[in-house]
Each structure stands twice: as structure tokens, then as C-alpha cells.
Image (cartoon, rainbow, N blue to C red; front, side, top):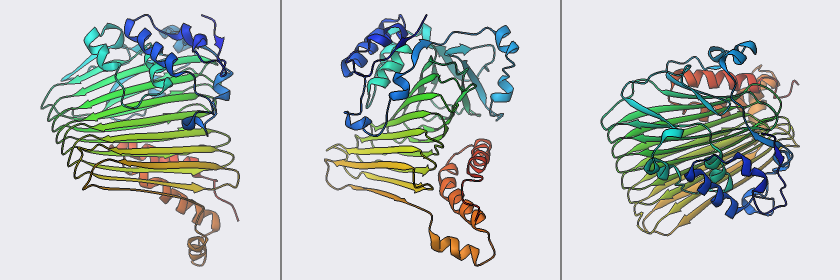
Length: 428
């Protein structure tokens, strides 16, 4: 189907109607998106993130390419895959590829299009939604429900590999839900890659329900092409005595806006949320968190870092909300930004909303350049300026990278960071 231009001045989503899928729950999600309306710079939450390049696209759902066509284009899943020891589920241009995916023992995997009304009702929930949250649900052409029964340990990570051919204006939309039973343990790696520079759109949303006493680890890695747009929104709901962690690494893409929303639903649950943004050129990376402490004796830790280079624009906004019943809450959020260019722009807005007594909550934000005293100290010991600067920048970035639980993935990300940072510093 041919695409239609999105008019940022119109209040409705008429130009996006053709992206909506036929299931009833998706039609309802589109109505919710339409009620909110397309965001503009007049909206406080979009003040520093322009949708101009997105609005110029003629959008259409990505067309499924057969295995024969993919082989002609020399698309190799093995070459794109991270090559880690994991159970792989592959999604290509908005479609689930069962042929390229693995069978996962002790795990039930159900495709999006065969879910029951009860299951899709769970998918329609959102902790802190915006228009793109509902639009992702409405337009999703692929996704899976992953269910792990109680007292089950999945021995290898589940690796969700999303590949976009990157055709101009093509929309690849995914909706996943993970249900982790009580006392179970799971690690999920979410990976997004686009192959061409044409300028498509990726929309992705994962909701995760972590039951009593379960342990959950999630890592999201975004490696889109330099012209790709990526809109992501992940939800985590944690129950009694559970532990969850999520780390998002944003390496490339023309426009990336990703939000992680979490709710601590029952007492003694812990969550850790981390992110690293490294835009280049004139890219815009916008990362957001919303954390709701809804129960007593819960702990949360957050670390978010941005490296601003060239003429990039980066945004961080984080909110910790403490409900009146959430006594003995311990919440900490840190955001640090490093500017390596006079033309780079970073806007940060950490916030606390506390409505309970007897809590311990804090947030900190710093923005600055490399410490000249540290550089001079290393130069006095024979280290060249560019090497000294690269060491400092690497140390800044690796603090987040080293929070990745999986050893193979951590090494991959560290190598990618080395490649990205090589030559960033001056050569004096």
C-alpha cells in the first residue's frame, strides 16, 4: 500500500490510519493514540526532540520479503546476529521468522496474531503511555508472548533479533510481552539492526511482568542505520521479592526515542535501570524513564549517561514517583553527560515526586567536558593527548557497559564503544 505524508499540524492520526492492523484490540489502541494526538514541540515532553524528519516520510507497513529474495540480497542472519550463545527469535521487516528461530525448552512462545482476547487485554496496558506507545500497539505486525512457568531457570538468554531492510518510509512495528513466573530466572537480549540508509521507521514495545521472587535481566541494543527512526517503549512490572534490571545501549540511528517505564507493585522488589546514549553527526537521541514506587520497602537504582559529539542533540528525562503507601522506599537516579563538541546539545530533567514519609530518594545530574587536569596529569607521564582523552571518554562510557550481565554481549558492546570512540578525541 502506498504511503501518506504525516502532517505534524493536524490533530488526528488520519494519515497513519492505513498502518493499523485488523485486530480489535489494535483498533482500540489507535483510538487512544488519536485521542492524544501527534506530538509537537509545543508539548513539554517533545520540546527538545523534533519530529520534522519523521513527518516528512511517506509511511507504509514494511512488506514481507521471501527467503528467496533475502538470499538474492545476500542477507545473512548469521552475519547480522551477535553470535552469542542464546535462544534466538528472529524478526525481519515486521514479520516473525520461525524458520530462523530456535525452539526454547521450558518456554512457551506464542505469535502475536493468535493471542486470545484475555492475552491481548494485558498487551493493551501501559504504565506511562504516550501517542507512540499506542501507535506501536496499533501497527504491530509481529511479536510474541513469552511465558515461563514458576520455578524455572532458562539456561541461556532469549535473543530477540529485529532486522529492518531500511527502505525509505517502511514501518516495522513489534509488540512483545514476557510473563516470568514466580521464583524463575530469565535474561532477554533485545537487538535492533537496519541494513540500508534509506530511512525507515522501527517501533518496538516490550511489556514484562516479573512475578514473586523471580529474577529478570534485560538488555536493549540499538544499532539502526544513520537514517533510521526508532521509537521504543518498554514496561516492567515487578512483584514481591523480585529483582529486575534493564540496560539500554543506543549506538546509532537518525532519531531514537526510547522510554523505560517501571512499576514496583509489591513490597521488597528491586529494579535497576541504566542507559547509554552515543549519537554522532546530527542525530537526536531521547531517552526517558518513569519509575513508580507503589509498595513499601522497595529499592531502585538508575544510571544514565550521554556522550554528546559533533552537532548531536540528546535528551534525558527521568521521573521517580513515590506513592503514599510506599514507605521505606530507597530510590536513586544519576544522570551524567559528557560534551565533546561545542556544537553538541544535551538537555536533562531528573524529577522526584514523593508523597510518602520515611523514604530515601535522590537524583543527581552533571554535564561537562573532559577534565583538563586529568589530561595534563596523564600527558606529564608521557601519554599523548588523544590517548588520554580516549581513556577518559572510554571510562565514562564503560561504567554503563559493564552493567550488562552477559559476558559475550558485554565484550561486543565494549568493542563497539571502542570503535565508536576511536578518533573522537583531539589529535594534539
